[in-house]
Amino acid sequence: MLPTSEQNHALADDCIVDNLATAAARCGIGVGTLRRALYTGKGPRVTWLAPRRIGIQRRHLREWLESQSGPWRPWRIEREMRRKASSQQPRSETA
Image (cartoon, rainbow, N blue to C red; front, top):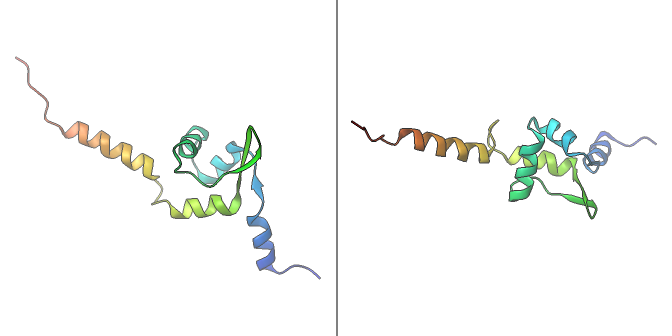
């Protein structure tokens, strides 16, 4: 008996992406950006495969992407807001 499409979807969600480059490519972001998101705690849930090796379940990666606002991730929005605020500050004129 073949599994139903729901079972296939559940099995696919449980697969682990064990390469950060692959996970970043699936998200459409760079590896460095994904590492910063993981380091600051704003990234997807991580599964520890070994003491120095991590992986991300596809389900957690999908849930994290769905929770983000639009194509620009929240840490990029914060950076852009800071950049705009600093550019709008009045500059002191020197004689």
